[in-house]
Image 1 (cartoon, rainbow over the protein chains, first blue to last red):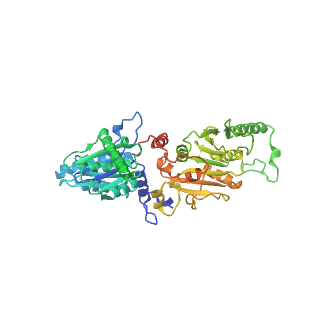
Image 2 (image 1 turned 135 degrees about the vertical axis):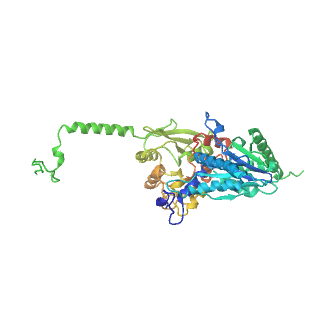
Length: 251
Length: 271
């Protein structure tokens, strides 16, 4: 078993495992669900909002954070690790603007974050970052992007993905329901993100937070009322589907 | 014998019975220790209290054909949401342990008073597990008795050569039964070198000794708080339970939320 090979990050096990990295991926599963959808003219990030303590300011618990005007990121996993990664990424975004006089591409900043994470899987005395992130935004040429990074330091581009608790169930839903028609219109892409979250979120729209970036527009976090409207529309569509499937009574 | 400095000391000898050399003064301290030990023992007695409707005159007198014991948050909440969520059940008794308070609550089915459910809501110390099990099972009439235990366990305790299996498949059920158990297997048996520990192990051992058919269903989960998906893992048991009691097969989302929310830990470590 893992016994002697899972304490120090720099040790491979005889069968090639880096146990600390794999355990970091378990830490990601303890965070609440995040879903990302790449539409034609919009990118959507939806998160399951954890209930806060009664006296806690819920504005200070943010899973969706902007890295620059045109890029934002949502994470799942250890809160403190996420804060460090976000701060470093924000500094890098501004440093890039000052140096190169251009905003970062989504791929550049994703690669920066992934490189940072990988360094922490190969250093003495450090543990990996216990977060996975979905990074969305638009490049200068107007192309929408969605990337995912992991504690191992890998990153990949996705059309739609989910991380955190119950990510597998949400990913399966997206595989069945992500079609070109489903994301053709901005509104439908938003509804797809909400439907995906409703698969796993208990107690409906109240616990969902949604952020969108449209081409040439900054990040916008949807208000609770807007989300409730979408949820009501989705429920109405579902009821209509059920009615259609009922066998018609013969006259 | 003489030591290095020339003083003479008596060498101890195993040939002598040392008890004969005890001073009379020591007897007082020994009695006080005994008194303290006796007091502690009395305090650490597991208290088993039956309700007024239960006729528990002495050993093995409580009529019982089926007893279902739930250990762990998800197991107890599963029974609360799927089985006990109706007026067909009444509270029949409880057990309590020194410094831990009420550890378990018994519920009895009104339409068939030989069906008992025991929800272990609190920690039972290791040194009192045997006593708890002996007292509880000792009260029940053993002829025709069958025992089912539901237990939660972290998936990190599940030993398997396939690393990916445990984390990707959690939550999942495994069972372990006594040699006299003939009930249909509702899940895969627990593979070695995995073991059952704690209260479920104590109950299973006691049932094996007394030839009582018993089975433990252990749910391996990666969530430490009560969770509706983990609770649903126990659903296959409803098929065998429905033969003895009337069940509510699908509790509403509100009822499930109540049991999930009631034990939510407010922690900002992971979001």
